[in-house]
Image (cartoon, rainbow, N blue to C red; front, side):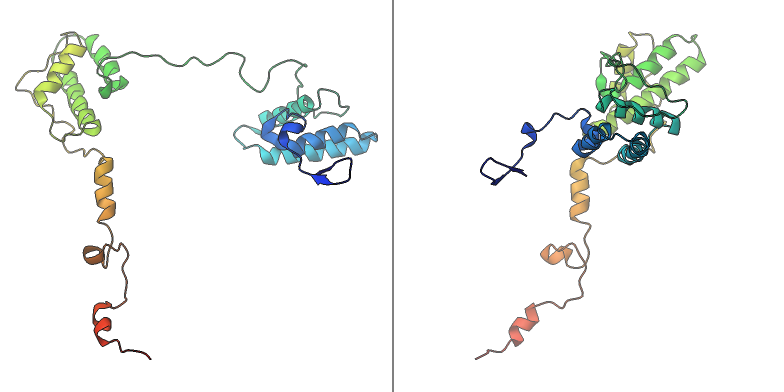
Length: 242
C-alpha cells in the first residue's frame, strides 16, 4: 500500500514497482539485498549477508552439490546488488565478472531433428535396423531381423487401435525401411513378444474406471459401497405427518 498526496491509501501494482533482477528469488529477497548495501557497519553487513545467503539457499531446490550451490548463491547475490557490495566471500568461491552470463549456458542446446519414415515404430527400431544391416549375412543376422520384426509388431499393437496385427504387414515394413536388405521369410514367426500385453487405450481405461465401483454400481450407478438400506421399502411404510 502507498499513500497519495491527499493521504489516502492506494493499491501498488507490480507494473509500477522496480523490475525484478532475478524473479526466481522474489521481490523480498531483492529488497533485502538492496538493504544490505545500505548497512554501514562492516561486521553487521557481513552477518546480514551470510544470513541472507542461507535464506536464498532455502528457496532454491537442491539439485547440485554444496560447492556448486554456494558459488551460485554468492554470484546471484552480487548480481542482484549490481556488484556494488562490500562483503567477504567464502574461500573457494569465485565471483564472475560483471557482464558474464552465469545463470544460463552460453550456447543454446540444439534440438534434435530426426526425420524418419514410419514414425509409429519409433527411433529405436530404425537404429536396430541400421545395426542389423552392418552385420554379416547369416543365421545371426536373420534371427536379429526376426527380433526387430517382433518388436515392431509390439510397437504397432501398443500405439495402434487394432489388437490384431498382420505379420505380413510388419515384414513388408521391415523390408521397406531396410531398403530390401532385411527380409523375414513368410513362414517365419515374429511372436517373440506375443505374451507382452500393451497398455490399454484411454477408452478402455474409462470403461474400467466406470465399472470399478462396488455396492450399488449395477443398479443406480453408484461407485462406492454403502451399507444403507434401500429407500424403496421405506417409501411404502412412510406415514403422513400433520
